[in-house]
Amino acid sequence: MLKLLSFILKCSGTIRYSRPTLVFILAAGVVSGVGSTALIAIINKVLSDGGQATPGTVWAFIGLCACVPVARFASQTLLEGLTSKATLRLRLQLCRRILSSPLRLLEELGPHRLLAALTDDVTSITGALSAIPTLCMNVAIVACCLVYLGLLSLPMLLCVFVFMVLALVSYQAMLLKATRHLRRGRDLWETMLNHFRSLSEGTKELKLHSRRRRDFFTHLLDPTAVSLRKFYVTGSSLYAAAGSWGQILFFALVGLLIFTTPGGKGVSGPTLASFTLTLLYMVGPLDAIMQTVIGLNRSGIALQKVEELGLSLLSSPAEKEAEQLSDRPPAWKTIELDGVTHAYRSEDHSDFTLGPINLTLNAGETVFVVGGNGSGKTSLLKLLTGLYAPEAGAIRLDGRTVDDETREQYRQFFTVVFSDFYLFENLLGLDTLELDEKARRYLERLRLDQKVRVKDGLLSTLDLSQGQRKRLALLTAYLEDRHIYVFDEWAADQDPRFKDIFYLEILPELKARGKTLFVISHDDRYYQTADRILKLENGQVELDDYCGHAPALPFHAALPLGDGRYSNQPA
Image (cartoon, rainbow, N blue to C red; front, side, top):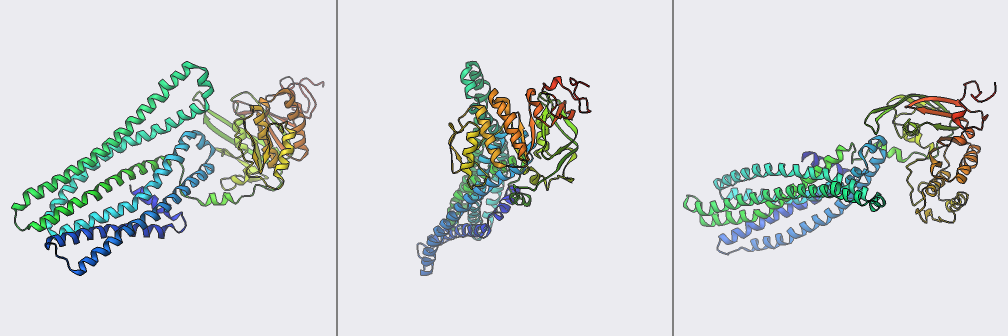
């Protein structure tokens, strides 16, 4: 709870002008609480005096009747604006933190956990912000009521304290148990989101296979949904039981005072009536406090889940600096990978290590990266482009080491079309000057002008075949016009005609424009178009040699001997 309150205070500081607003909201809540208690005291006094009231008492009553609702209205109105602003700010901040976090961490977390944090957790956390002023108001009411009860009868107040401590201890015990159930339910919600993702992305496969569809519901979706409901219902029921138990103890206290105190000494009838009326008035604020604590517990669970992701909802200076980076870095000469390694757990749960890789990439080269599946080609791509930070060794750009401070700027040298690429409907991050016209020319070049239109940087459709979608991804790469182009199995989904266009026209054209090309490919009939062949096997560089454009034979039949000749080339 303390961690959550500390976060809320820090969070309010990230929103411009919000701290004075928050202080005013809290003050208005306290004023409303104190005013409500003062109204009860005035009513008790008038009743104790037999209904006689002085003009000052009447005016005080009228003033409080006007002040209390106005203070509550001002508090709630300002609070609504502050909460919506906090939700917007935190959700956008989490998006920025996701993009600034290491790619490997995001891959390990999975999209379902990130989605849960962006939707439910942020809303729950900012819900705590809206609960704080209400909590302050009700705490103020209870505190003022206790002070008033102490003025009426100190012995009776001590009795009230004993019951409140008993209620608090028992309530806390049930609260902890309920929180455990809600936390397990929150864990299952991530699993449920993952199932929803499988449902949306695997609709065709589920429709085509009735048994798979049945097992999906029977073994995945249904059990998770039932368990999720069970934990949430159990947790909510325990919260309700804790609240009911507190009310039982409270009414027991009222009954004890009513039926036993009149026989005692020193307590008059009017005092007892005022005491009882005040206690009954406290039931509402106490119940509201308990409900607020329940909401704060949910918010605390949400904050803990975000922290478990390894992300922070508070801004960092590094992010602000990254937003100011130029996407047009200066010309370069060499990129050197010096003893670079990267380790991860492969699909068969065994440790796989890429490297150590020693490689120098020169500006203007066309490098083909070849090798079997699982040899480490895509991991090398992510290391080269700065998406992965090397676990050992160093990457140097023109002799300068790429570190955490310069890695973001280093990435701006690359345009990449991944094998698992993503297409945006808008041509984001590009100069708007003549953008549509440039895009139309490239669409015509890529044979997509009959299927896709572009207007104001917006693509008319993404409903294309996989090969056409890859060509559309190439459109964005063209328009970015960066120094280094990286293609990860780009031609794998293309027909033979467009493979020829890609390898024999597009790549030479980009090279003629001074671009450096890093191409992961299995199309050995086109290897002669490369300046250099880099072959990986089991995470190691098995071959790194310049082609010389001598043979036009499949790579497996023309292995370099290292002196410029090939194994099938005459001596």
